[in-house]
Structure formats: C-alpha cells, structure tokens
Length: 109
Image 1: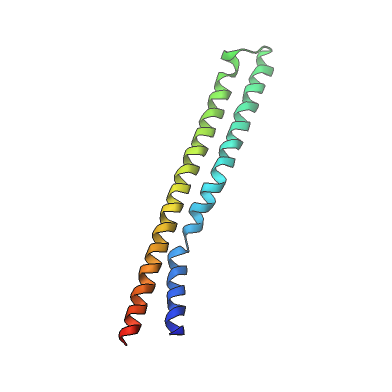
Image 2: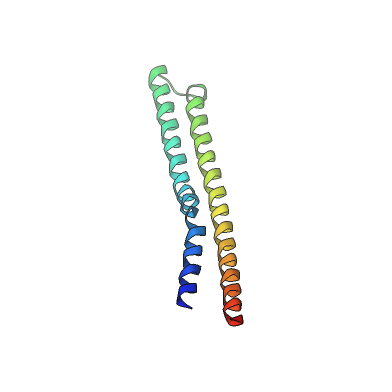
C-alpha cells in the first residue's frame, strides 16, 4: 500500500514538473511590461530634451511604445495565469481520479 502511495506521488510530481513555467511567466510578465513602460517614458523625455520643447508630436512615439509594452505585459500575464489555473485544476482532478482508481484496484486485490 505504501509503495502504491509513493507511485501516486511520483505521478503527481511528474505531471506538475513544468507547471512552474506558467506561474513564473504569469507573475513576471507585468514587471516586464512595466519595464517597457519606463523605457517608453524615458524615450519621451529624451525626445523633449532633443526637441527643446514639449507637445504631443514630440512624445507620441515614446508614449506609444510605453502603452504597447504595458498592454503586452498584461495580456501575457492574464493568459499565463488563466492557463496555470486551468492546468492546476485539471491536474488536481486527474490526481484524484488516478488515486481513486488505484485504491479501487487495491481493494480488488
């Protein structure tokens, strides 16, 4: 019985071995988007410094890059978290089903 329990745990660990990647992407993507936002704002200020004046035409390119980076970071993070939660729930259901089948098989023997 303990041998079967160990094999169930090994199977669970094998199924979860790559799930950390989605968790990492989901938690770090907003920060990467934020970094892109900071770079875009820096470019906007650089454009103001080079032009010697402000205005929408001067800062538009940098702000556009900042907004695109922010949106991309948020989209990637949301998708990664959704997939992480989906796979986490799916793995829990599979593990429970597997455990129940193994216990049924052990009862037969």
